Image (cartoon, rainbow, N blue to C red; front, side, top):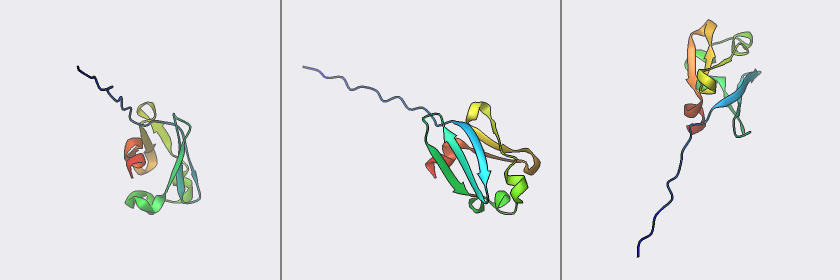
Amino acid sequence: MSSTAAKEQTTEPAAVRAWAEGRMIFCELTDSRIIGFPASRFKILKSASDAELQAVELRLNGYTLRWENLDEDITVPGIVEG
């Protein structure tokens, strides 16, 4: 008798939308979850103005948040993992 275990497929989380509200950054993920984190969690974002935080863009098919004017990139899988 033998048994086979189903292989788990893992897919890294990606975002479909990102935005800033006050000093919080939010992402809507492809699975419809919305996650947020305080800008103070990251050194460069902590010192950014509210207007600079609002300039967040999605890059690399939603796997990265980018602030061009701050030269800052944060991966969505990294955000999800905490």
